[in-house]
Length: 409
Ligand SMILES: [Zn+2]
Image 1 (cartoon, rainbow, N blue to C red):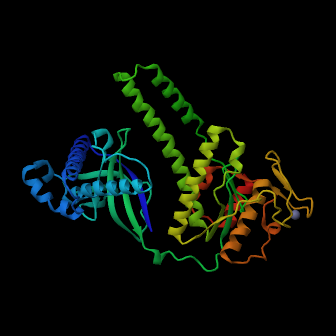
Image 2 (cartoon, rainbow, N blue to C red):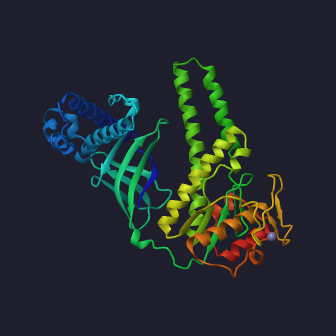
Image 3 (spheres, rainbow, N blue to C red):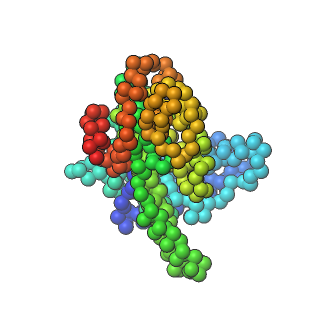
């Protein structure tokens, strides 16, 4: 499996300038290769063009200052874009030729296989890049031990911040899933709360109202400025920073939440992405909730894969209506927060009941029977809210401790 891990870089002013110079040299090479291909009667093989790089360096001195593998990746980029273009043409879409790249649209460079190293001298992590030097890196999460770093892409975002994205390969053999999962959980990604699981946890999404207000304020300020003026450009960057900040915080929460489930459990069951619950939300929050849900599921899936945890996305039909205890379906409007079964008398929080249904469907899908542990015996009958902060900050306590602390809150 291949994954991307992204980290913030903190280059000094000098190094940032060198990076910009390298990126711009790459951009010029990109345009040069594009020009070569446009002039050619038949398009040469990529390796042939890459083979011409040493010759180019004899008159184009700036190329000599950039790591050779980085230059080869520029050629690859042109060819990759070309094949994307061809694929789109086959689909019957009319697209123009590849475009010449202005600086605004070319912001990154890629080291592949060689020319980079992660260092950690005296607790200060840095990324070493050949022909550039060492750059302090904010190593906010570890790269899995069984992973091989294949490449690193260094990019300046429109906000001005620099980031390194590592393309890593994780050895599948070391992440086998248990045949008999013991720690199992069903998660109902709810609407009013973020998620509700079969261990009685209701995880509230973090409150971003302050960030959202700030974003609206700076956007208002931008609309008042004269388009294209120096102040307008400055303000546009502020808006981009606010957007990036909100996006980063949202992703960070989803990363931590998905990480928590993938590492704590042997089997995680969720509902397959489905728009049913989202229909009841107003437009904006619907889009936001839908996007967050999709991102959460994707993160959870690849983290489970990485940790050797079963990930099951079950059929979402009627998970709310069905009684987790006897299976009888009862209609419940959104505002009814309690499940109270008219047939067997089982009572639970609406989302907890749904989470149980999701878990039993998940166990069925994987083919493990858990008939001896029915929801009635184990489900917490009352709602026991736990803040997102709590889940995120809890290390890896046992199941029992977590339940106990949840109840005492
Ligand atoms: Zn029932």
